[in-house]
Image 1: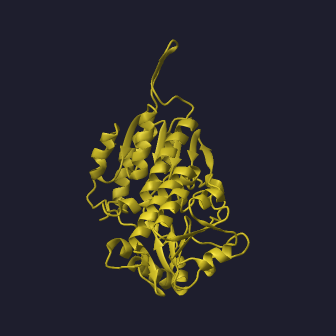
Image 2: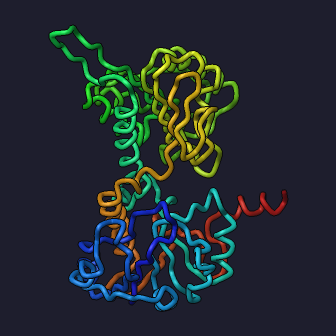
Image 3: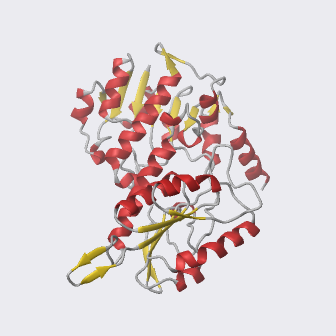
Length: 385
């Protein structure tokens, strides 16, 4: 059984699918691990580190992909700068594991199915106790929330904590976090540790206790509809509910020094939480960190990947924040991947068992077909349109 780790070809992607420690674990289990030369250079792991861990270094991209029984990536396969279509390099019957963005780009699933590739998408790991060790979305979101707090502190032209000095007392910064999922909770924890007064808002009342346990005040809004999916994620709400929520949060946004937004709906444009009018009411020098920038942004003024100033407000739309902390992001992701591989391989024998709820959930293509009903539905809607 050959497990191959591909070098990420996107310039902004610094993470790797396996770190040397996890390579050692797989090799001890009798698996052969191939690593493309230079895979870890942006994560500060050398080819020698991987060789010492027991991996075989492969210099040619085409050879690595063609040899793989299981190909591991972080980002979805793409057309490389040298013109190579990565999907075309996979052999029929191979397994591909990574962040495949199936809800945002269901067309890739169709291509993988046509290539007879079994594709397992890390975004589709169910939010259950049994699947926690494989929940890559959560592990990476935690990093994004932490880094958002640091970026906010660096961008704000004020102290975060209250300080008593000979020149007088400095009042603490006021931070408002919108969305109390994994990223939001980590943003709360980080900004609280830095000394800010923190408030948090979420459409799901069930997260109130978690928010309060971190020392933040929970801003509540009463909505007459279900606000969470069966998996615990926030779900898209009606326009009427969106308006009710906006009315509640407007004053909190206006009075905050920092606003961190984290609200995202898988496969859909991020919900608009901060209108341009709300930005214009904010104090000059205030900061907005929009963690939903890649999905269109929670702020109407966000420009993905850029820092812009609107009426004196600094609006930052970071892209792929976990990649900015590649060492620990890769370490966590590699553990998520390794846990999934252990579920797939029993006694060195590969078993794609659809009776297992985790395997059934993460598998989007198998045996030339789209396995995921959700992706089937998205493709049918796309073709009908």
